[in-house]
Image: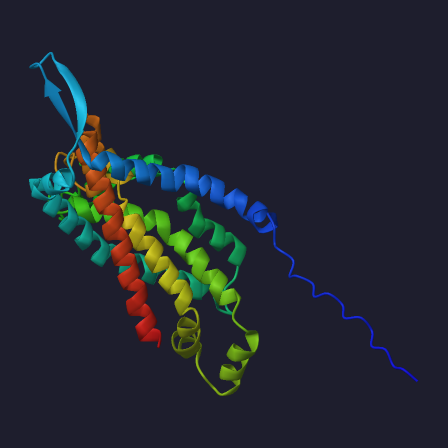
Amino acid sequence: MTITSAPARPRRRPARPGLTPYAFLAPFLIPFVLFTLVPVGYAFWQSLHKTERTGGTFGHTHSVFAGFEQYAAVVREPFFADSVVRVAVFAVVQIPVMLLLALLLALLLDSTVARLKRFFRLVYFVPYGIPGVVAALMWAFLYDPRLSPVVDLMKSAGTHVDLLGHDMVLFSIGNVVTWTYTGYNMLILYSALQALPADVEEAASVDGAAGWVIATRIKVPMIRPALVLTGVFSLIGTFQLFTEPQVFRSVATSVTSTYTPNLAAYSLASGDNYSEAAALAVLLAVVTFLLSFAFLRFTSRRNG
């Protein structure tokens, strides 16, 4: 009796994914490339050129390759160091204050004794829904010593502070930013608190832990990733500070056209100095990326 073996089946090649993954990624990739990568690439290309004029004042202008000459020119500008230091001081003071307020509000809403949570959550978030220009104009009115009832009350109480003066205007701008974005960060932290397992808090309560101990020793460490996220967002937003100083320029002489790096880039572009403005914008993007990356590395090491 002869036993014949069944013919070997041909091995199937693994199916190729085809274009399906790219179709799902297209709604993100297309706008990202068109509205982020292309403008950034064009700004970098423009920062490597400069405009030269031939034939005197009424001659012709043409663009020539200048390498990193525009970057050196920006760094040598007197306003560059001042604006960067000013924004750094703003970040060191304003970001911790804002995130602390956002964390306190989130913990209050998440507590078991809180009432009318939906109402207060909406109240805290409403300032973020107000356009930045409108918010800055409203606070500028409250700071203006000629119009503000707040300043009049402070004067009647014997306190004479120029909230738009050179020494106070940076903190006044910081107050506007804090008022606007505290509710936004609160909502992120509150969502992280709501995602925590309920049995953790119940177990701590059974063990006799007080409410503030549960909040500070258990909840806050568990939402550390959300705190890091809000910190990175706030750091990026700080170096993009533009709307509030631009509005305050109309009411305060202490705010100049180069008060922040972003405002300085806008002023350079308004003066037809596009190459130097592009160089400043690229520098600002690089500094923001490096600081955000350093902040993430520092927090990840602390978590480890």
